[in-house]
Image 1 (tube, rainbow, N blue to C red):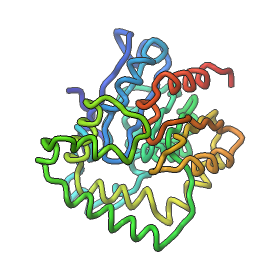
Image 2 (cartoon, rainbow, N blue to C red):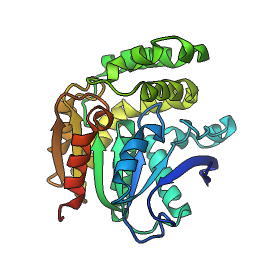
Image 3 (tube, helix red, strand yellow):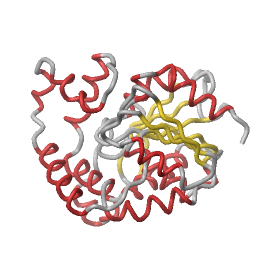
Image 4 (cartoon, rainbow, N blue to C red):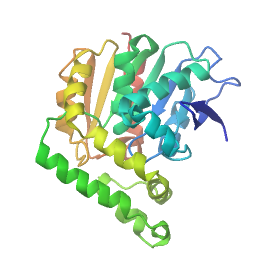
Length: 287
């Protein structure tokens, strides 16, 4: 298992590529960022389909999947590690550690889209083009946010490990996220990732992603996008409704918008052929 130390934490990463020396082959690099309580696993099929065009770099963000969370004393010593901006800093260090100095293509999903946006805002010179899938901009609603925090905290707290062995549990767990069916193995992997996610990190990133701070910072960052970007929304997404993506895309003339019909929060898995067509049309277009 390949790891690299970023901010004192060993981060899991993997390359999916045709080149013998991915990242050093001179071919373009696409970096994939996963969403809340997930891991790079669900990007693997997309990366496999794109590896003839890109060296694809996948990694698990801090506290999720195969990457451990920082030690409690490290979090106390540096409270900023709880911010999504710090995950964007993780990405910058990861690219430095792997010797990737050339601009990369970003493909970021859900909460990973917010991390990717913050990275693009801070380091535009390191991004060739950016793809945001199922992300967007939203307005502050204190009552709704507080109810969301209570519900999210409960969901994270009640995660018995035996749940993954319950028949139909993966299907039930994923039902809210999907419009179309995806393979059972993908549903099982999602549930496994959710069950092993670090509790403090899961709660902290949930609050950071849906916060007054995010409603102030994200619109400004979208309006400052300096690189060609693409926002892809799922028509029936209940997690990040398509209108939020449309609103974010309208904030910058650098952002194109695509609505994927008959999909929800995971269009890359629900309709992979259309998703790949949309992505390749965008990355191949001349800027």
